[in-house]
Length: 393
Image (cartoon, rainbow, N blue to C red):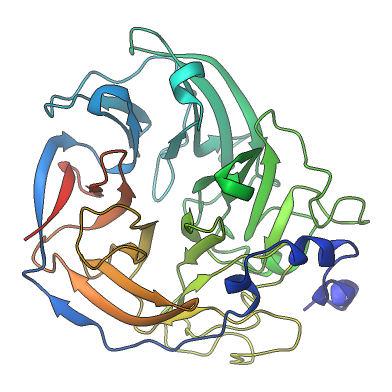
């Protein structure tokens, strides 16, 4: 760690109040090494809802059983309840599509039925060949054909020439009794070659940020008023967070890609340092150690759970419905590398078992969400991508 930021190894003043309000599962989280996944090839089946999507990245849910799907090349489409795919929405901003960049996550506002508001994040082009992750708000037109009143709420700083590690998952924060507090979490990657930036607070690389739905900075963010720190930052020391969701108790859960090994699940707390690239359970792609090869260091948080080898996780959701006997409360994680759906059993805030579902799906799973109907939905990251519905066998 840069010695100029040694004081940041401890929580910022005022963070203790935030921690006092957090669910007990967050405060008692302990690292749990990988368990041997149990294959469950016959536990679930995947039904095709729609196909012909180009590298879909995320799925959100609209009234009347419709879906809103992003495509990484820079498009959004509505999928009808019968599986028919509409033409791309008009009014989408310019996207820096290439490599891992493009149109990425999307969610609908908790009050969507009244305001038709949605939030999306994407690779935003900058001067020259630079880019960064941006978060925008828009309203879906009444006829469902275009985005209206598009406004960028946040742009990751600094912009940098890279086609990797954009992060880009959005979560609407909720507090007591599941009531939204008017803020959004956004995950941000370290841009791959700027990984050391994840340990300093004068940039947004390798961070999770929290902003208001109007783009403002919440006054109770942990680094507000700290010299040399960007006030949007919620937590830091992340690599490439491509999965984030709220647990049933309102706790923020997130997972991130490790290098070779060391994919992590974390419970990001305000002001905390999650260690990348100083500590990691992974190695360089060459097999060399990263930095000093440390797995632990004072002032840096341990993951709740990690994978070794990496599964390349992307998308995550808790099961809260009664659709799947015995699964309620489990955490679902989509895997790109090994092309399966992981079902993680959670007990007392720990991962106690992992099960491999849909091992024969044969496609990279990019997102998993639970819909209003209680079913789980997946999108597959291929040039002829699909929207799938998961049913128990």
